[in-house]
Amino acid sequence: MRSTHDDSNSKKQSAPKKQSAAQTQGAAEAPGATEEKPSRSPNASPETADRIRTAAIREFSTHGFTKSTIRSIASAAEVSPGLVIHHFGSKEGLRTACDNYVFDAIAEAKAANAEYATQAMQMIFEDSNMAMNINYLMKSLLDPSEHGQRYFEHYISLVEDYIAHGFAGYVFRQSEDPRGQAATIATLALAPAILEHRLQESLGTNDTAGTMTRLAPHLLDLYLNGVIEAIPEGADTNTDSDGTAQDPTDPSGGDQP
Image 1 (cartoon, rainbow, N blue to C red):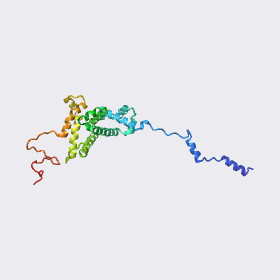
Image 2 (cartoon, one colour):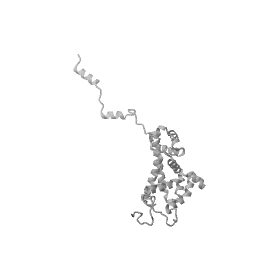
Image 3 (cartoon, one colour):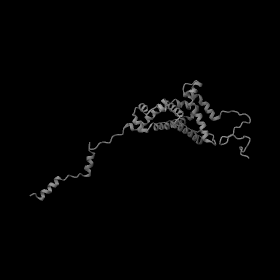
Image 4 (cartoon, rainbow, N blue to C red):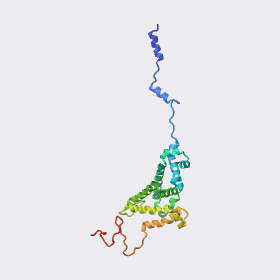
């Protein structure tokens, strides 16, 4: 007959030993006990996104927005197409990121070089990256898609802000129609880029930098002094807020009954 003492010893031997919290933590920290967390892939870094965006700007400005593909942009950036989608979601998302970057880069470059007045555009175009950005800008403005319209509206809004708050120390005359004024200035500022090849043929310049260097003194003079030196006697030069002409001899602006 087995004794109670024997049964007790048997239970003690068969019962599993409980590990203390310290022992459990030590086991978890032991080499090989758990898988190490994978380090972050360099392809997921912001630097990779910047490389993709730079490659996209180059592809878009060279081949246009329709012909450039996610695959061609990925190849230019030396990444996989899936990584492009990972960072930007779609081709449309990538283009929006390019739009925003190029717009800000051009605006910052203009502000940084504003003190050089007529030499500012030449200095901007001497930077190959900025020249590529301006080429991208031209392609975007000529694109009939919503992106092109968004870009133009963005540019007008920027000029409207300059009119209201000044730009690099320059103060603009205020109009009762600031949006119309901004659209006029934006059109004048963008025309040389849009008419690049026509201007080169007419002026005998070889590139956009040469064309802008030739035009810059005249544009600055136009902004500062206007273009008309004298007007015919009796010419009506006044307009009200909606653009309709007023009688210059009527001090009330034509509001009398």
